[in-house]
Amino acid sequence: MRAMIGYARHSIEADDIDAVVSVLKSDRLTQGEKVPEFEAALCAYTGAKYAVAVSSGTAALWCAWREISMSQDLVSLPAVTFVATANAARAAGLRVGVTDIDPETWIGGIEGRVTLGGMPDSRLTFVTDAAHGPWTHSSVMTCLSFHPAKHITTGEGGAVLTDDPEIARALRRFRDNGRETAAELPQIVGLNLRMSDMAAALGISQLRKLDGWLARRRQIAKAYREAFAPLGVVMQPDHETHWYHLMILWLDPKRWNRDRVREKLHERGVGTQIHYTPLYRLPAYAADPARYPNAERYWAGCMSIPMSHALTDGEVEHVSRSVRDVLA
Image 1 (tube, rainbow, N blue to C red):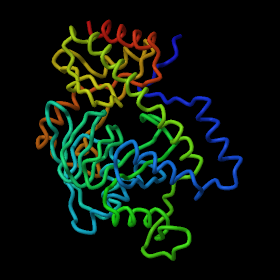
Image 2 (image 1 turned 135 degrees about the vertical axis):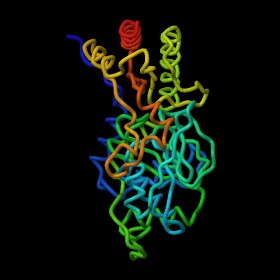
Image 3 (image 1 turned 90 degrees about the horizontal axis):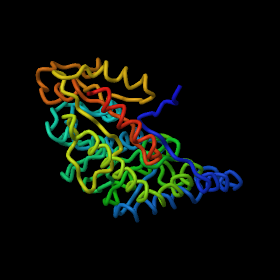
Image 4 (image 1 turned 90 degrees about the vertical axis):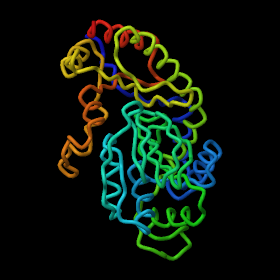
């Protein structure tokens, strides 16, 4: 039986292992030099003036939404996003309004936008959930995720990018029990949301390879687009800065039973996923689906197929051939 090709896959190479082992052999596993080094590398890569590394992508969102909660009590988020985007806002004391998505790009949001699948969105807003990339820093705060399914990984981890020195200082204090440095007395009520030096060392090593990995993802996306063009499936618009965290296909429910398609692909060793069940269909954010016609249409036919820089040419061909055969 063929091994399952999952919708996402991370890469851990010899240099990554060496980087983590070097920290394990050092005197500081946390609050050492690697987190500031990783933050500096993120700033150099993205152009942001400040980067604040934290323990997860959700923690990054929580830190950012907490800053927003100082000046307002309501944020509008797109209906199609991972629930962490909204949960973090709720945890920060904000009310969450849910908006419909753009029918072409499948992204949306007002105060908070989400770059679904890696589709670029240059609108200026307060908070960008850029867990899917690209890491284009055009908002007051841009939140990144380094989960193993993402473009680079720190195991678990996240970061907030900002150009505002006061926001950066507040974020650093909130992530470390109210203090900006270990020498400072706590100034605010904060938590321990710190990233470890082991995680940061892995992130530094992985970041050096990101451009090559992005190029591979775009190569795979091009192969998929060429393979599926004759089938009539819908995909997000292609873009030179698309990061292709996900490869989302939209299958017209009038032609295909999406759930049955997923079952047949699973039988062929091709893993799929749904990104995502809209917020208004979750109990904590329940609302009338009729208010979100674009999100409803998207959700009825969306399906993510395997996408990772680590996929081999043979695996890409197997996925392409399987999708073509099942949809024929």
